[in-house]
Image (tube, rainbow, N blue to C red):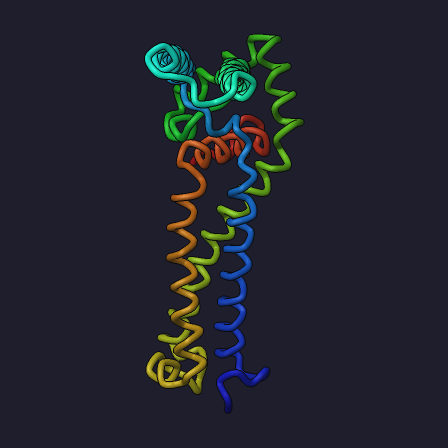
Length: 243
């Protein structure tokens, strides 16, 4: 029987695995371009430091520009020079506004966003839940955040879950082959088949690329926060799914 025959369970199973891997990679690339900034923020202290550094850099640039103007002749018309200066000031203002927005968003939500410590430390989890539930403002912020971001959180969680299931299904396929579940095919037979060898390599290649892209395109802090949010919002603040 031809390996790619529609009635060949072994070939069709491997083909479906390879197709599923390509689909997961496509979703990973799509979602990596739509990570909400709120999941990427560092601590407020780091944001304050970044703001201070940006302000200092802007001041140094202004001082440098002034020094250049006083020590050399103008090579541009005054209208062009003024336009350049206005553009620089606008860019600096936009940078400052962005940092202010980041500070506002981070400080608004940082008390309801947690990393994996929330799931690994029951005492820490209880402390966080109690702090939220005892503060009317935090309850409101938590509800607003849930309403705004739950859809994207669920989509990212489905992606993470799909990668895990893909790994499991790949191993199950190999296990079935070794246990002679597919009567006509052993691992040696599959590797001797042109399409079988290609698909088997593709399955594990896809998995390796998933892990590399996941690590490179979706920062660990974002993955952890999304996972914790999913557990909290889908299981009554994590009391049922923390083991």
